[in-house]
Image 1 (cartoon, rainbow, N blue to C red):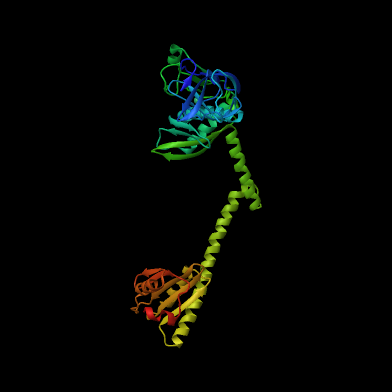
Image 2: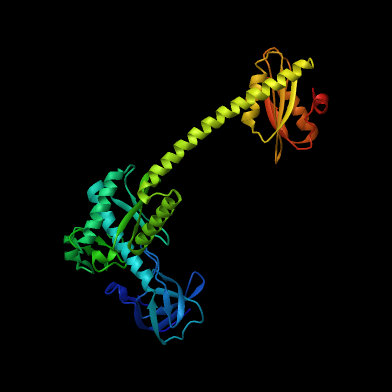
Length: 402
Ligand SMILES: [Zn+2]
């Protein structure tokens, strides 16, 4: 590993100014982070991944930044695409502004929501994560009342409207001891504190908005149980606006489909569901009538030939139809129904017997399936199966199996 001078902690420019989006710095070392070459600077405005906040992106000496990390010695590692600039070189860094602004909003929103959950729902934050696609706050509660969470969200958005000043500073030990910190610091020296008006004071090293109005909006997007605790999913800033905008577009599109306004979509879905239930009921009734008619025709044909065995294959019917036909046929105690439905995948088959018959339905289908492939089996009274489409489902074809 090469470096100029001793290893010393990188000066973090974003501590004083989270909106410093371009800076000049000197290359003081070539290091590596998990086997990949990294660049050390005397100072940086790039936020390294830490404290649940993702790293910044942007460019350094014109090279795209792919990751920013910090090691135990507080040295910030910049991972870039391309050959590393030489030791001692003066380089310019430019931070991706949209990503930084989003992280500022998410992080400030998280502090406010954690405070509000504490005040309104008596739920203390155990951990939080500001992810690439989703943000979460885990609280030390096994249950959370949805209304309390809605009140917490409302309180946060009121503080956003109030446009309170957000201040980040390094207090002296005496001043720190007097601060009403929401949680204990994770480090024991050089503790940075973020104060959001009079609303919340927390130790944090992240990038935050300068005023609460810059957060724009905080939206709770869901509650879930997680490892015996409750997890609050939330969004803030541009991401919250974009998500709500996408949902609004979806609702409008649904409204166009239903030829109604977006607010009438729930009623339209309710009506559609009711119509579906009614359609299913009348389909069931029609199926029962058709099955009854088919059963009677088959029974009459069998009787005219002195048979008590009904063999039939249907086109374009389903298993519930076969069951209905078989049920009607086997109300005649001596009769056996051997029915099939031709479908794309082969034959759906069913065997059922009346109360006085000793025909073994399960054994019968098992023997056919063993001879032709497919599967079949069940009780002596009733069995179902699926056979290949080449099976000859006629009295002659079924004769060898029982
Ligand atoms: Zn923070």
